[in-house]
Length: 79
Image (cartoon, helix red, strand yellow):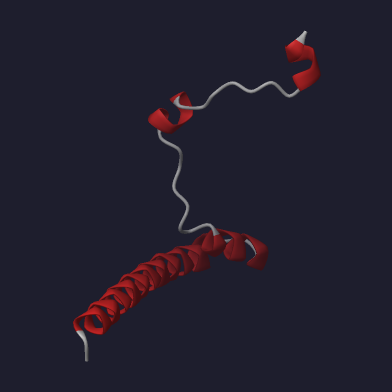
């Protein structure tokens, strides 16, 4: 095996490992959300929504402050 082929396969292995780690973390986040929602959810729709949104995090103050004001009416802004 040439050095470049070995390097490429190492890179592919690394990327595959990173993807597997990411998937594993997502699995456990969703599993924890399922365990919490099973007790608290009033309906299946609420349960499903909680599990689907388990990976989302609230916006921080810094995220809110970075928002740029936008004009919805571009024509009025040009005048």
